[in-house]
Length: 324
Image (cartoon, rainbow, N blue to C red):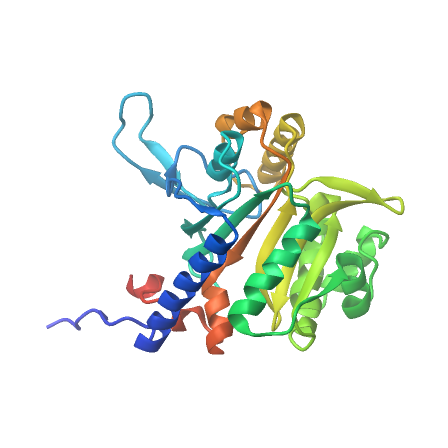
């Protein structure tokens, strides 16, 4: 007789009740602010070109006007921007999203993401609203603000905008063999410094927004120049050393967005990853006119982990990948 499969949920009943309370609280938060709840596809025609993200392909029977191929979405962003272009006004969504190869104490390939967009907001405006939401739910102190440059200088001892590539690779040799560092790009080196030096230091720093990322890490954020350095209008919030959200003053230029998609695919080729088809519907929406806005994606599982004092996402997910 074979062993019976594990059927019971990993998360406790109290954790499941806390998740329900979280969702109710969030919906009340946005209802009071006049932000519309929306739903967009979990299965879409396109994945993302971002070389740092790997989607999960899904096949469905072909229907009229569409092939059978598709992707489980890594974020509802592209579809939500199409709604913005169609005149939706401020919107939010509680979405189930999927990212391949991500499993650990803070990662599950399927997870819950809160994403919202605020027409007329800048990244600074949205940071204030993120603070209201996180402080309101966690009861923590309001986050302070630290630039990416200041964070790297303070906790890693490098100026990310001035340090030479060779010096960055040398610094990474404490975690990788020298021959492994030879192929590391600048941003990969900076990501290692963030992971091994900055994020652990932030665990005892209190809630903090990291802002003004290098232009090369703009993703879908607009870029501006400050003191002769081009920086992304992007922010991330860390609470207890846990990265909780990623927000942008959104790029709305279709030409620049296409250029970034193409740059992403070049980076994917160099990394040995397959190129991804560009989402032409998103580009069409940008050409039609996505309003000037700021948007943010916040991990709800991690937010619940912080609320319950948990160090493992399996404590707050009923059925993580291993028993799903």
